[in-house]
Image 1 (cartoon, helix red, strand yellow):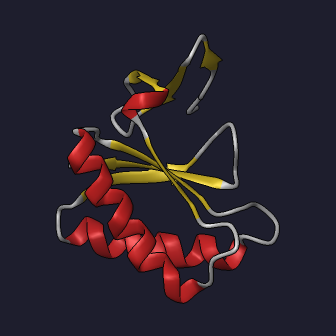
Image 2 (spheres, helix red, strand yellow; image 1 turned 90 degrees about the vertical axis):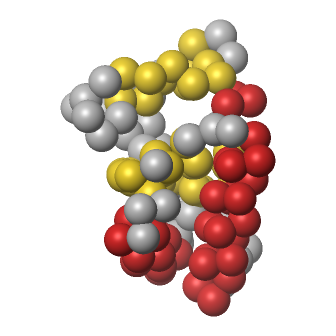
Length: 107
């Protein structure tokens, strides 16, 4: 079971190998897709990947929304699958704490 807990300025994620990572807010890039349309998903994700490289972090949280965000979630997963094939993304999964966001581990 993947868990994310908020503890004194840091988030805890279980990564794709089953190891628990403690991530501080400043070591994480967030991409908020609220009020975006599916055609904007690719550029927003690529901007997030670029920001993560600039900040030298390997985790991105993509916020797509839960109920009304299902179309965006599908577009996000499709784009991340494509980036996984190019070895940009190591793994991604729905946040266990917030099903309206996807956690991305970069290579």
